[in-house]
Amino acid sequence: MTHLYVNGSDIRRLAVGFAKEGEILAVDFFDVGPEEYLSTIDAFLRAQGSDLDELTGVVAARGPGSATALRSSLSIVNTIVFAREMPIIPVQKTDDEQDVDSFKKALANFADQSNTNFIYPKYSSGPKITFSTRDALKRKKKKV
Image 1 (cartoon, rainbow, N blue to C red):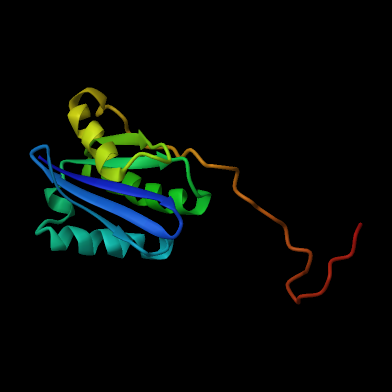
Image 2: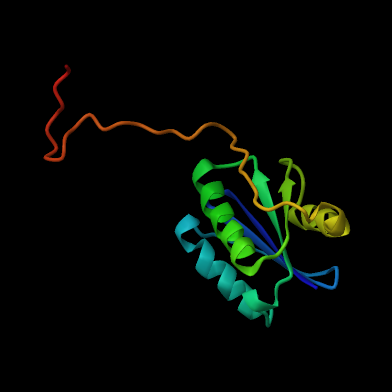
């Protein structure tokens, strides 16, 4: 059994881990943004001598954290889980908890918790969505 760990709750840093037969073989950190998460996960798995086909489960941090980073990381892991029909375990980290400890706890209880289909994010604060004050030609919109 091989498991992938992903924590994309920090917009400037991605944590990725790999475990085989319940033993954590690697947890690495990458200073990348959300647009590089998928390629970073792929390169990490290859560095471990593995790929998506070998995975039997995923553990992912659901937050709290950056809305953009969590949407990106969780959309990737939810897609992998859906496409590969494998179990996924959500981890809600505290600020002082290390990723390796979160991964270890989730692996210890994987069989008991693996009925989750998708992970939903827990944001630190709501997404900041704003509306433009200009039209398509960059002119200020008139108030109606």
